[in-house]
Structure formats: C-alpha cells, structure tokens
Amino acid sequence: MNSKEIIDLTEQNCFHVYNRFNVVFDHGDGVTLYDVEGKAYLDFASGIGVNAFGYNNKKFNDTITRQLGKLYHISNLYYHPMLAEASKKLCEVSKMDKAFFTNSGAEAVEGAIKTAKKYAYNKNNRSGYGIVAMDSSFHGRTVGALSVTGTEAYRTPFLPLMDKVDFATFNDLGSVKDAVDDDTCAIIVEPVQGEGGVTPANKEFLEGVRALCDKKDILLIFDEIQCGMGRTGSMYACHGYGVKPDILLTAKALGGGLPIGAFLVTDKVAKSSLTPGDHGTTYGGNPLCTAAVKASIEIMTADGLLENVNSLTPYLESKLDEVVKDCKCAKSHRGKGFMQGIVLDESVKAGDVVKACLEKGLVVLSAGGNVLRLLPPLVISKADIDKAIAIIKEVLAVEQ
Image (cartoon, rainbow, N blue to C red; front, side, top):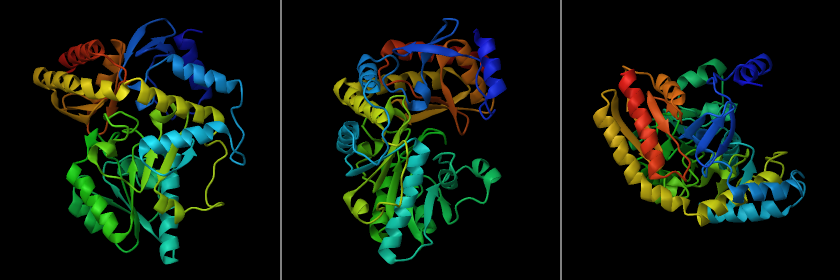
C-alpha cells in the first residue's frame, strides 16, 4: 500500500482522537526515519522522548529477539528472571529502593497517587486526602493523571475528576506553601515540564518543596516520565538537582520503544503504603517489556549516552542561541540537556513550524506556550545538530 491507502484505511477504522501528520513511517536506522516511499527524516522527536538510542540498535534488538523466543507474558502471579534483573538495574540507576512496573506513564501516575493516599491513610487512619500539583503541568490522560494535570482545557470536558487537587504556580515556592493544608498527602512536580512548555524547575524551588514535604511528612512525587532516563544529562533529572523524591515516575525511554513505565519508592514509603490487594496490573512487568528495560539501562550506562548528552549540550545550546539571534520570531530558548524548547512569538504557530520542518525532512514537536520542542535521540552528533538547526532556521525565515 502507498501512503494515501494506508492513511485512508487507518482513518476508516481508528477512532479519530489523533490529528496525525500526513506521513507514513516504515522503518528507522540510527537517528533517521524512512517513510514508505523511502524519504529520509532526521528524528529530533524520538517518539516523544521514547527512542533514546534511536532505531535498529543491535543490542536492543538482540535482547528482545531472545526474549521473544522464550516467554513474553506470564502475569504477576509468578516470578521470572527479567523482572528480577530489570528491577535491580532500575533501582540502582534511579537511586530508589522499590519498583512497581506499569504499562505506561499515566499508569505510573495513577499508582503514585494511590501510594500517597494509602501512606497518609496508614499514618492517620483516615481517608480524604488530596494532592498539590503545578500549573502548566502534564501527567497523562487517565482520570487520576488528568486530575493533577495543570492545564484547564485538558480537564474541563471530563469534570468532575478526582477531588481535592489544588494547583500551585511552578517555580513559586510561596504558592505551593499556600496550597498545602492538613489534607495534603503529596506534591507532584515535573523537574522539567515537557508538554507545558519545556520549562526546567529552579534548584531552589525543588529544594524548598523537598523541605516542605519533610516538615509536614507528606510525599514528594517527581514525574520524570519525559525528562528521565538520561535526557537532561543525568540518569534522572532529580540527580542533577540533588533532590530526592519519595516517589519517582518513569516511562517513555525506559522501555526503548516497548510500552512500559514504573513508579519507584523509598523503603519508608514501601513499608507504609501499598500491600497485596491494593494495586495490580495484568501486563505490567511482563518478561518482554522488562527485557527491554534491562537492555535500555545497559545501553544507557555502557554506551556513553549520558556523556554524549553532556558533551553536546553546550553545542546544541549555542546553535539555539543562533536561532534566537537570527530568527525574529524566536524569542528565547530553554531546557536541559537534550530536552530543549524554542519559544516563538505570536507571529508564527509552533504547530505550523512542526509541519513545515516535517516537509523538509526534520521531525520535531510542539509544546504549550507556542514552543518548538526538541527531543532528539541521545546518540545524535554535531552533524545532526547542524542539520536540524539549518532546517529550523530555514523554516522560521519563511514562517515569520
């Protein structure tokens, strides 16, 4: 089938909840995607931050292929080797103590909310606890995750959602203190907001929230579904800030492209919250996806990906400086590591820029606040950066 036939067949049979671009990708290699007609695209989106080591990685493919030939599902009623190995590696690199594997990032958020509520319930023998979340945050599309997502437009059609959720201003410690009361069981924060506009937290803000949680014995949840797994130059962004959460959420790059997430907790939380029967999942932590976790962590730690992010981030940021200098419609840029955003003025729409870049063979994303979002695979080179920036400049010169 050609592109049009595939697109038409998809639209005939799939519920239209995505406004997909008119491109049909067929395969990828390294940092390059190819459509069904053979056109090449430089990937600076990595499947929304998922494909951290690009495409067709031999180590990853070999691990998955071996596991496919052995066992890919058994349920959580039984033990299996990949669960043991993946959980050990994940706890080590996250610097947390216990892991619960989910099928997605949104499910990790749901599990974290339940964990925090059960922790408070066990502590005070009562229910009725709430969460403090941040304006402009994004945590997922399920009911609990949507309840703590700080963009009103996402929530409004689905009200009423989970009650007792209060929103504070990101990077404003005073507003967080004002939002916390005796019924607060947790504060949830993205160390770097992704969908909300690629906005990093201030170190002092995260330190202040941590101190507040310690003072009131409430749990600090870091959502690192997008900014985790090496994207900011540390295995998890919180490591770069030097602030440890009570619950850490991870997904996207965790499985290298296979659907898996996790929430991780400290021993203190594990001993005082969920017990057998409180939470579960049929598919979460299955042998195939945990094999992907094992492979992803091994590739991330053994193949110099973090070093590549840290060594090339100054170069990437210098090229983004050039974009801001040379393109009138680019107001500024912000981000950490290989999670960067170009803030555009009102003369252009980020969505139009994304579409124009795609037509010229560059895959990028948009984010809230009219931001052009760059989430390249962690294996990109200087030459890849140069090519991407050249296309972005060319598009912005036309669009503005």
